[in-house]
Image (cartoon, rainbow, N blue to C red; front, top):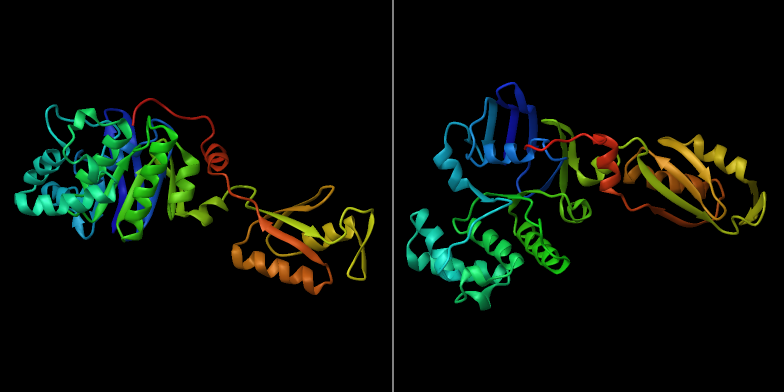
Length: 325
């Protein structure tokens, strides 16, 4: 769906985007993460045909975005971080106004708008003046407006900025619904836990460059510590020599056994469980569990610690950042 090759954007001596390479498949919900000044907004505006690039190539659904700005605007729907509303326009009139900008007939706009307003849970507000809506409702209306021409790609820049928890939840549900419909979505946000829950893939950007990108699980396991596994054994913690399913073992033996397994980076024994820093994927973790069982250990608990995108973000970007994007 989206293929970016060696994209650059400079403002005089300042390089906002530095040889960026990124590929997003059709149907992905891609989370764009990065400190202020990383280049996220600049990249998204170039993809949407709103900003000229200094070099490189951007292809959206097979169309050259850099050389076909008018065509690309029909392929893309854009929700900026700050957007204006129009006084004295009702919600349905607002949708009709933007539909007319794409040359759509009023009857078609009205029919499509009915479905879109239902999608964003604003059906009961179609005759309400836009400027009387809450901020969360305005954000959802902006999403509906961006979908009026049925774009292939939806780009949202900080859509949850300034929203209360309820409004953020409603926006998240809207985006999940769009993802289930097969829409390709790029979303930037500083609310990192929500991105990890909602997105199928993420990319972390810093100082104009992509630090890492890929499917959420792969990126989460790319940190120095890798996957964190918690292992509990029956009767573990009763003493230095524990008995489990007729097998006598001590913690040193268990730690040595685990350390010898593939992809195990670090083993730490606590009072009631064993913590393993693991560099493999889900299949490799299952193989580790099987190996323990075959060696006679009675495993009563085996689970992966919930990944923390904020921790990974700080680990990869440090405290760098700026004011311009």
